[in-house]
Length: 394
Image 1 (tube, rainbow, N blue to C red):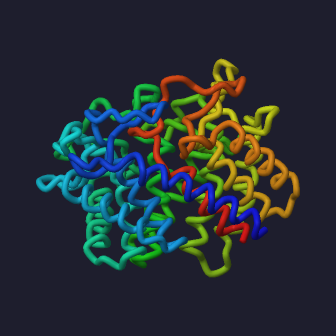
Image 2 (image 1 turned 30 degrees about the vertical axis):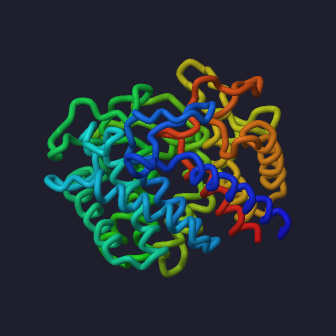
Image 3 (image 1 turned 45 degrees about the vertical axis):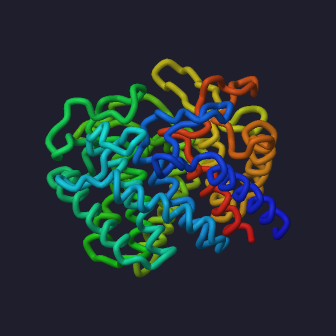
């Protein structure tokens, strides 16, 4: 598999070189908040905590894999900007956005943003050994637990005001349901806690990470369909009929990774989730297109497929399929991965400018007006996928 590993390393370096060459903001510091689909900078765009945290994680992780000093330099830029501009010195936690000059803009405290910042800080500490970074990560962990954890019913509430008071509007984006508990936030909190536990073996963190795994098993994975339940109320009642194929397959490997990291004496948790991971991958593969790509969503209530093929969905599907092949030994998963990679090379990777485009429509023409860089468009899904493939296939 050595030749294939080199292909994925080249793809990773192409992604990260794009961010080095196009996204550093020399006037205001940090990174531009937006580049459009023609690679044009929108210098006045707000800067998002999630985007900056994902840059921090990606370059920290890539430095650990490839030891390129320029990756560590970019990670350090991200770290310093987050500490200076996104950390709330009064109430704690990180803001959702700052303006182009780094001043607080949307000051709500979304657990999703806290999780990604913790994720990035953990990776930066692993890359550098900088004690301050670990202290910031532990501080965020404590704030999430104090303000976000539902002590009565388990799980984590979605979002809070600047002072951690209640919010009526907690959704991540306009397309989301306004519910207090979401699969998306829990999934990325799980990956953040998994990353933190690898550098900070704290018993309380272990307990909360184990709780997140069981929250998925008991509340957020539909036992009949093995699809994820995207939105729930405070009592864990289902509040959505949407299926997100990308999240299904992403969760299949992230939850298993969390189980492996915390471990147990006889590997019972790992073995039981390996079976569930395969079921989740099979459920996600209901969204495979004839060309091997993975569609975006299914509205089960109206029986409507949303047939766009987004960049992050393809990235997560690659890892999920390879993980399923490694668990099961079944060639079908490897064959599906190979078709998906060929699709991605043909239609998603921008071979001219670098990075990956947002996505394509059902007929594989590009989706118009989508960011190349933005609040949601980042180097994390595809960068992480390339690193995972390098690790798993070497």
